Length: 353
Image 1 (spheres, rainbow, N blue to C red):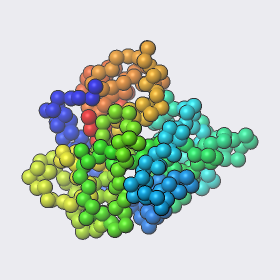
Image 2 (cartoon, rainbow, N blue to C red; image 1 turned 90 degrees about the vertical axis):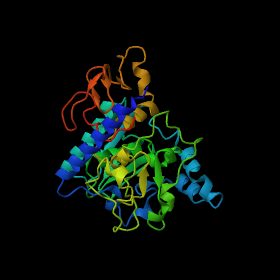
Image 3 (cartoon, helix red, strand yellow; image 1 turned 45 degrees about the horizontal axis):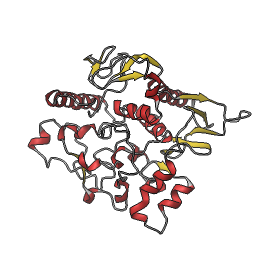
Image 4 (cartoon, rainbow, N blue to C red; image 1 turned 60 degrees about the vertical axis):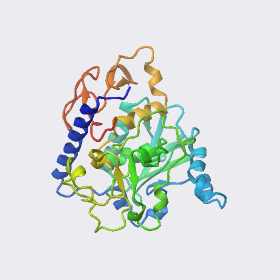
């Protein structure tokens, strides 16, 4: 379903890399990453921006089999009971959230609502008869979220510099049940981790889940996921030449030592897709739809989508298309990054098939 001829695949990946460079070059002052925003707060969070509930923390720091069973414990608590099973996610805003920031958060929620079968219902902070469980967006310290549905008002921090579309959709994805992409059990097939380049004390942030506990719904590993760490995440020293905006597709083959990242893609033309915070990728959207069984809504009446696309859950006559494809049936070449197409308009950068 997701296979594309190798030559076309490499051409598309090179094109993706060039598009990302164009976007970055247009930014005189590139937006900081979540790790940069949360610098100094890192030890308060799991994996840099995840808030643990009491049960998760107890499992994590249990004196029994701490290292081996840490992630398995988290997953046993988190899935499947942490999903929003009725597909409706109530939310509210804390008083610290400005109207401008509320608008950006609503845009991020609208993205997930439009691309999946999920619905988001806004409530007043102090309304009578509020939902028993709801997301409460606040301007706390940094960018952070719990993973999956919790009890009561569930805090999502959209702090200073966190109000970027890609970051907000990232934190919302945590709240909907997503961990980081690079913690998948099959990660080592696609990226190498240089432990010597990781800041001291943060090495365990790159632990993997076990195959038994990590259900990825058969969705391929995605270096372009909005949930993936960047190549420089938790780098030990700024002196390491890691964030090279002028990285070139061919340089990856001719100059393998040109930079020293924490994460290195096994296929070098994918190197600069890691850590993008532009928008959720096609595979992020596919996984969310599979996780919440949204694809079942169009099983008997959905349009037949080509090239790995799938019917849009809330309008089965439309297709959601992988990056590089467009048209009603995903059988045409997609439009450029940043254009206003109707199919996959905001999920076009950094896709791995």
